[in-house]
Length: 493
Image (cartoon, rainbow, N blue to C red; front, side, top):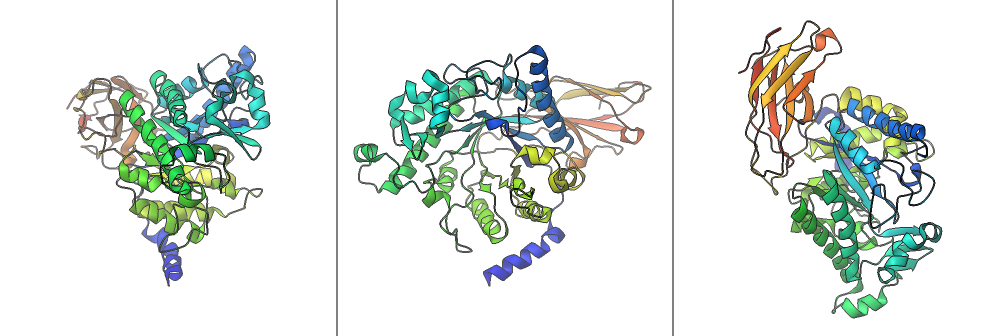
């Protein structure tokens, strides 16, 4: 009976799906490991440095054109990084040489370019795996396996940080502190914060005897991961409380009353307890890796949402399966999942990986641009962190020249946290007052400063009226300040 109910639900999804919401996470993972998504070219000369930058700009431009608002930028791979670190070396993917600077800071560049386009940039950090023996050897004395041997263990021809060693969480927080303190990231996103799959023989028996304290091995391992998550979450909030902390757990938590996980789940297979993390309030978002279809997606997506404790659940969609070499799913599979996510009021979705968007695999990019993401969306607010809205911007004035280019100016908004400088959302419409509840009317978001120039590409994209709101980095939005358009003159309302 449960199977047929889900089948009926899937059939009806396109019919009952909600209109595009004003608030929705639209994320894409940009994988730097092995240059899977970026970079494709090495940066060894001024010309090749610029070429490498332009590769990323092209990706971000296409994401912006499709109204994406979140980039998960891979910042730590396997014991190497994509920023100027005092702890771990630059990945060789940028120059061909471990530890060699590409002549610019890729993370800083990515953040700056995302913010120019009104998109958030989250530092995606692979937590526990350190790579193969070859990878570790390539890092030489700069590898954590050489500098901090006590927290590293070999297992099945790979090396891992040992979650059972108390110093592991301190090491991961040291890396996190470096990123959060030095960079204007909007979030830190942890991948593979788990034990290796089915790691019954993972070499942590010494630590278990020392720290187990009567718990079962499975419970002790889950507690180890929870302790790391808790330590990092609290550490980030002490530095910059608005920075979002998220993980991408295994896509099924555990068996549900609706459908079994068939043994592959976060709780039992890799000792994660993400529902416990949300219940405790030590996650702002989770991006469960829901690279499944049919009844291996829908019941488990519902389970995440029902146990979310109000936190943002953003299923990761396996769009790589649309490619013939990966699985040759039909695009309809992804469309139905997105309809389902909206119908259940979930916070949005992430797309793994960006290459399949760039290549328009099975016309998915076109589908998003023309249908699912036709209009922009703002970031969902985080009321568990902050509920105080900024003051509205004041004295909004507009001036339009003979070419139809409109310049807006306003007086700055204020926020209760002086470190949290408000950003601005620009709305436009031919109707007055501008309806700021309709995402169709959003023309820009994440605007910094107190001026904005709107340049319509086509005559029918010009508008008679504008409105401006202020948003803080928790997603709180002020009341709108409206402005009537006066051709050739400024007029404030």
